[in-house]
Image (cartoon, rainbow, N blue to C red; front, side):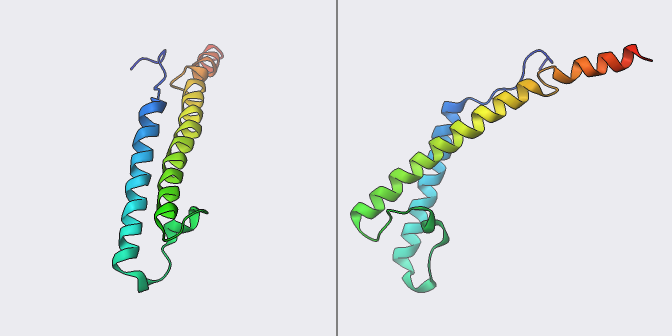
Length: 104
């Protein structure tokens, strides 16, 4: 990798992988809730305001987990790509190093 090319995160791939991860985690939590309902509240389910132990509630929770994955990927991916372009990989610090070397 050269200093001219900043590393980029492919936001679409990140969105699909995060959404799949959150959906699988949600379904595992729901499955655990069905298998062991007396172990207390499931911490993950508090982030799903429309969740209920009905078919519609589980579908809403699954859709929300997919939406959370896409939202996280969009925000994180864009921020990562912007900051890497401005960081040393993008060459922003090269100017300061070159300037410091010219003063020596």
